Length: 584
Image 1: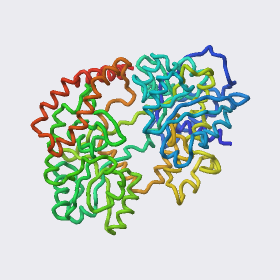
Image 2: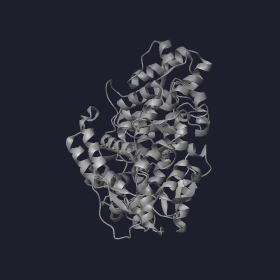
Image 3: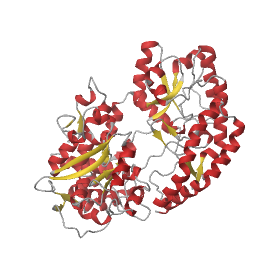
């Protein structure tokens, strides 16, 4: 029933993402499922889309490329096998999923996939906090599962390293025959293919493919108390000087104890407040971990040894001395964020980091204490009015995750076909919408919409319910995510959507390193040998420079010590990876 409408949605999603790339070769592995050509529906769909006003801005060459790429895609016949076969998978559990299920075997998405493909997945799952340790233990034992979700992020050297060391297999020669849906998506635009392939052109994993037009990012940013601004007669600040004056007024006129609620690391997520100085300096923030490397005009920089780092630290130390930042800001993460809503709902702080999806909760909690409580999103702070920051906003067509097929897999064709299912019409529908009749229904035109159990649930938010039903939020994004992302946006309160718009407009991501650039195994080993101690030293030093435990006149010696520890070597290794990515 939904075949025709799903073909339309797939084409729409492809248009939105402007996919392009190159399909890959043949395979001599015995075929495990029949397929037949089915092109007229997709071809006619693309013709309809060419006429739609909503897509008038799309280049005609892209439409032509898309049509050519999709035209030869065969229709795979399900089930893939007559009798149920089992594949094994290692993955990480997601907190949203664990609110509803003990194991992924209970997830309705995987249950539907099994009913359609006749392939059962036996899961070995690790919690988020234990994933790295458990992954390394599995690799060290040599007892791999057939499929692994996490190789690209957790293996030293990423997918390239896992290939070199015979942990996973190359997929290029398998895609056209056993993964026609995935192959078609890679064949439509070089940007997608460039991000997913390795430096030598190898396809090593089934990667998530994103609808960037509907991608909810950035999801976090700075929030400020509008009622406090009104009380002190100030406007929303745009520059560092204006922010300083606002925070000082909060303290002096309103008695706010901690006007700026700074992260214990001394740096906000996404380098907020630091990015205006043109540097990335965030090293770690609770569960978030990143690296303070970035690029300007193709040249890699390490923010901690740049002048902008000194400027940021000097400013934050001054604010600390003035009482704008709390005396105990550097206390541990749990004590600072254990009940974050209660903290930001109090009258003890005026500017803080927040999630767009939580703004309504913050306001509701705050108004129980103070009926006038109100918060609004604040754009990135810069040195001059009207400027944008260049960090904190880089979203690729494909995320860093993905499913890899290991050398332990005894039925490679079936494993590849099962992965490809998630890029088919049915797989995309399940991953994005869940279970028909429960989480979604189809309207008279065959378009899905979430049911009230999702949108009007008294116990769980829509975001939480997608964790129960929609695989792209509760497990790996190994699918094409599209329409339901837009629906999620529509379900958010207006203030949440406004926050995304304001946070996004304040930055352009021009300095960010590509998400999918990668070092070789040797480079990763060398980099980690240098960087591990550097990271520890920086993470310990930043809060101390801010609160005065380390004197500012030690900054020069601090930078010199980092250089002696290998900062320049780390820059060179990152530069080599960036150069190769740019040459793909």
